[in-house]
Length: 184
Image (cartoon, rainbow, N blue to C red):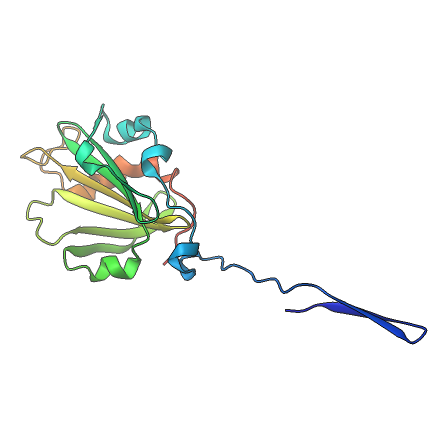
């Protein structure tokens, strides 16, 4: 887009032109991957106290969930005797998750608090012991996975819980810390 102005002063014509301004898209998902914002870092930006509030008791970090590859994947996790909660961020798209044969879609437009996202479970999870909540944000996909680790799928004293039935309770204190944007 060019803009300019002209004035006529005694036969001399002066014209000025502003440089072309390219607007960056409001949807970071439309940018080439190398131009997208830095990934959300759930390990640094979500305090352990919020995780403990969500799961209802103390947790410890789980080293095997830690991965730090800025621009590609950042992950961490916590757990206790009842539950493990892992968080990660990536630029893997909604369509890539939907088409991933390891998952089945539980709800394509689930709402958690004021946020909309995608809920998945493992295709081979016969005991309903894990559930994944995804948010597609301005700083990448934010993955929150809840795994019930007791043999009876207990969560906060409720026997035979299904992970996708209790994940909202566990992640609700974290949702406000997730970057803005609910991109499709």
